[in-house]
Image (tube, rainbow, N blue to C red; front, top):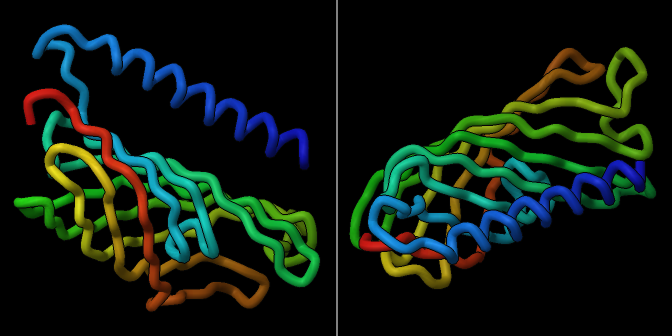
Length: 178
């Protein structure tokens, strides 16, 4: 499990390091990139804590985007790795946005915390996001807060947690000419 986590983290870091180098080589408007944001989140789809990368599909502050993350925590001696992936949509203006999203979080534990009926320590849970995002138009410190209901199957048949809060702080990298 430790080798899998290290490989995933190394791939995650290498991908975003390579991407940042490509973004820095922009030379004209045709090569513009969509906005991207990195942030640390407490709660939400990463459950307890996660590090996330978020980007817009179009070259604007709002609209459709995606977030990819990696998180983890220890509880009663069990280690848990989470990988939240969500599509999200931002609506608003002047740095203030309403965020809505939906996705999944892969969860893997070293103990019995996420043990399924089949005896597996791996599970996938669904997640939604409803919240506020402060994202500066020209880049800078970004803030997010809201609720992220999660749901899935477990040994008892299923679960739904409607009021899982999240809070995040990060940095937004500006695209050109926004």
